[in-house]
Length: 195
Image 1: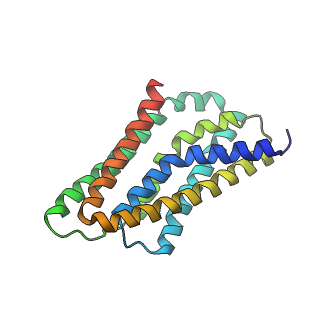
Image 2: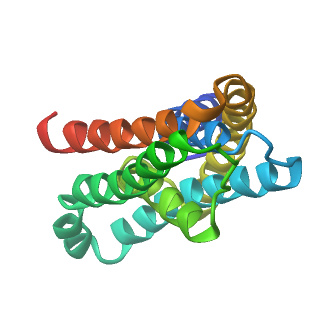
């Protein structure tokens, strides 16, 4: 295969599709921390972009090396995403309920929570390795770079939108962010298990 306009468009659309869960989590993060600085926004969008690019590449490697092991693991992907996002979302929800009685401070997103979010929103992208299996290494790498760039831009936009609404919603923001994460986890689970 060679790099064509169709390949670039397909990679771009793949990036948009994969970034939707990360976009929703970015919205939740922006809601949770409306005073977030641009440097932190850049870091958060970069983490999501990194994981959205890493997972398809791991999937591609698995297809070319250890396909049987990956097929066994694939059925657990929706469960892992549900557990991770329900945990983070539930914690945000509880923090929001506790803080609603008092005054709400922007509690911030920890590195640990961000890593869990990054893995949870991108773990289903492992299976994209199957869709790009016919690509050679260079094409797979270019596809992954496009996915990362698209994810970065979309997540940064999600953070900006979330921050704007977070300032307007103040004490409801953490609760809303937690609910969004739980729904994303349920959507990944339902799509992966039942559809």
